[in-house]
Structure formats: C-alpha cells, structure tokens
Length: 381
Ligand code: P1T
Image (tube, rainbow, N blue to C red; front, side, top):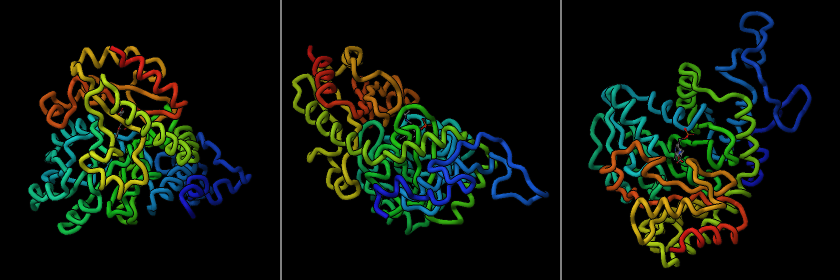
C-alpha cells in the first residue's frame, strides 16, 4: 500500500466486528466484561488497552513502517516512557537544540534518577562519537530541531549507534511520517507529539512511540500499562481522524511554508531565516535526502534583533495566532525564548541560536495570500 492509502486504511482492518462501522466506535469505557476470569475478547481494563486506542496505534504503526505503536497521554509522556527503558548510571547523548519540554524532562526529572545527559551539536553525526563510553545507552535525535530547524543525518547517527549497541530514538514531530520515516533509516524508536501534525487540528494533547521490534514493543506496552500515562478514547479517535488527512494537510503546510520562508528571506526587515529547504541551509543536502519535503515550520529574526522588536511583530499579526504548539491547520506564531524554550537556561539556549529576538512560525493551511499580507503588515517598521 502506498502512503496516501495507508493513512486512510493502514491497520484499520476489522475495526468494528459488531456493526462494521467505517470509523472505530469511541469505546468510552474503563473496563470490559469477562465471561469467566481471564476469558475476554482481548480487552480487560482500559489502561491496558482500548479498541479505539488500538485503532490509532495500528494506523500510526502502518504509516511509520513499524510493527507497533504505543500511545500516550502527551508527547512528553511518550518521552518519559522511552527514558524508563534506562536505569541509573546510564548515559544519553541528545541533540543540543530541541523542544524545551524534552530538555526539561531530561534535566529536571531523569537526571535526578541518576541518568546523565550530554547535549551535543549533531550537525555532523560523528560529533556523537566523542561522548560514547561504556555507560552510553541511547541517542536522542530531534530533526528538524525545534526551533532552529537544524537537520541531523538519521542514517549516519544510526550507523554509529548500531556499532556500539545504542538505542536510537528520533522525535519525528516536526517532519511527520509523510516527510520522514526514521525506522527505515535505522532508528529503533520514533517518538511523536501527536498533539501536532498527526492530530492536526489543535484539539488534542497526545503522544506516541513507534518501533519495529517485538521485544522493544512489549517493554514499551508494559511501561504504558504499568506507568499508566494513556490517552482517552476520544483523543485517540481525534488523532486517528487527523491521520486520515495527514498527507493533504502536510502537503499544503509545505507549500505555504516554502512561500513564507522565501518571502521572509527577501524582506528588508528580516535578518536570519531558518528553514531546511534553502540551498544555503547547512544541512540542506541531508534534508533533501532524508525528507520528502521541508515542512511548514519557519523561524526568523528581524534586523532590530531585540526581544521588544520580536514582540512588536508578533503583536501586529492578525491571521497568525500567538500561541504555543504547532502543526494545526491554523497558523501560529511563537516566541521560543519566553514560551516553548523558557525552561532552557538563557546561556544554553543562546548557544544554539534561540535568542530573544527569534520568532517561530507554524505555517498553517490558510490561503497563502492572507498569510503573506499578515506578515508583511507586521514587518512594516
Ligand atoms: O506537548 P506534548 O504533546 O507533550 O509534546 C511535547 C513535544 C515533543 N517533541 C516536540 C518536537 C515538540 O515540539 C513537543 C511540544 N512542542 C510544543 C508544545 C511547541 O510549541 O513547540
């Protein structure tokens, strides 16, 4: 099956044996009747499993080319589950430019449990080799990175990780499986904030992991059940519905993202623009190889280069909404330094370019003329 068919039908065989509904029912139940102890139809207690959740998990596994997907109540709950594969004394090599909440759970929760994190510039995959020792167990990659749009070569990192038996986890939230399939490139675990493009409509908080290895899947399903950060059936229904239009939405996000990126690059009030589709992006050739297009996320600074100027631009926007999050149909603008990346110390985030004047756009699927007009108006100073 090709991707555009898989988003609609992948993993969706026999989803409603009772009435053959085309979409799975929302099984709003906490438990399932057993005929005698242990005798049931595959579902016992809804923390362990719910058919609506299974329908979402199977759809996601199908489009990521994995054997299994494991759903969670948020993206960070999915990250939390990955880290629970580790134990005290283990070390993780992580991308140095990444979502602030990922950095926060690494540093403020799991570091306290004795896991050590190294934040490394992975623009050259070989940089990670300097940090590998006998305690290293995992490499954490986010690509494109949030918010600097850096690109990391998944295949090259996977080759290094395989040599020393490290697990490679890739946060595929920005790219989505429509543009990038990390398991095919050698990753062991794909992580998603399903809150973003998978859900696609800014109406659900959810996360997921995808793997292509039954042993790893069993461990993660066990953590899902034992720690219990599961999504409810309504959220699973919404995220599944989102997946069915992922290909159409992301295609338009990419088209609009490209037009916005070039508009900004040519605007006299704009200084730097970060978007992996530019030929002068440092890892453009890797992006072109491992992604099918460049996505709808664009970050930029203005020539005034102050926090105040960024805030002034954002506050003039009318079609773009000032809000955290990304990947919904509507365009959003954010100020990473005070919003999504506020939990990273200023000196740390400024090293990777997350300066006070940086603005991040999640370019939505509205009419491009309205988006450009909105930006042009906000940038007229
Ligand atoms: O918000 P949640 O569903 O828990 O997902 C966390 C997460 C993980 N990974 C990436 C790359 C993310 O961007 C996020 C969430 N990010 C935002 C809320 C944001 O505005 O960047």
